Image (cartoon, rainbow, N blue to C red; front, top):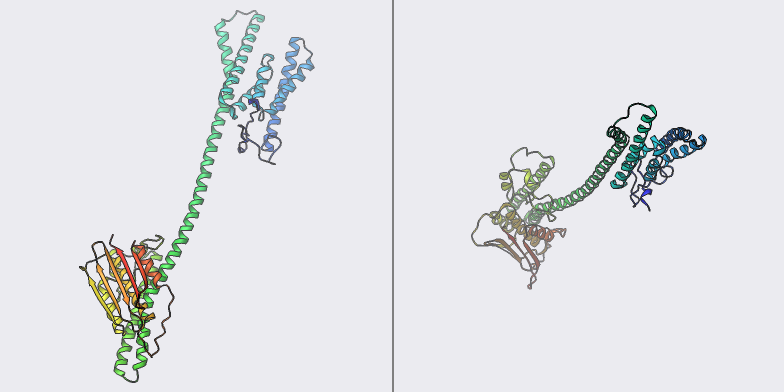
Length: 466
């Protein structure tokens, strides 16, 4: 396709998509022929009608001066002026027609509007400059010849040639420069608007993607938080309730035979229930505080043993890391979690429930960090709970090792002891081992669990200190 076919976008309408050859295609069904909007078509028809009338009058005047038939000159001017209707489709052709009829001093509106349309179009600037120069040169020559002819016929003193050239040059610049500069300004402004619109569209798409990702992250965070709360509820409830079930069974067995022992068991059962309620109340209070964004109404007084590591534990997905821990100050968080120093009391509680448990500590005892100690404590607590559930009467050994770069714990138990008495019913949800593994791996540690050759079970965990 030749360059004369370069189409001009609609100045009043929003620019249509590029058709691939430097032209802007009108949206399908949105206008007539190459006009994007009907009001653009009406504007061009009005300009073409004004140009045709002006060119017809000037054509008739030129024909009268040169001896040509007047109506023929008027018809020629009418056709020339009507070509302005094609300015959006073929701006180069319209400007060439204006340059061609310049010697006949016809097409003043045609030249002005054609130059503006050419400069505002997507035609390369070198072509615009060349055609504008041709139009200016033609206008300057015609003006010079008119000045010379007018002076010679008037009989007045002849103006100097340089002055005539200067006046002709100024006239050519006045008729060529303003429409070209205005067209270039409109073209630059349109490009700027397009660039800003594309940037705004890009930002809007990015915001939509960010919003979708934020929703996905929020959904993952909610799922992780639900899993973590379920794990904490399991740890808090399973240990205490299992002990309460064991003591309740023992209380039923000795209630009539040994009232004094039954009274002691009932008192211990009540203490465990109160401790379980205290732990649940603490955990729910921390969750409510984190959700409301407010400080706790009063100081947290932990029971023995204290609630689980819900404070600031890292979830498996890494979401909401430390979100709950940040709801309390450092001192409250340190005071609210279980410590390795409380393992002895945990073992003592299991012994009081009739379980044979031994605790062995290797290495020098030292602080290992709140989260790490809470994780190891919960692993031991859940392992002992599983022994009571699945291996009633079995003996268990708990070995805690303080190493240079890690803390390791090993819980083993033998097979369940044979007995004729029915074991207390302790339901299991099957999430204990999963919860322990999640706790340990969240700190980058290792976890293993499985049966032993003698029919018992073994749970081991290693948590790095860094």
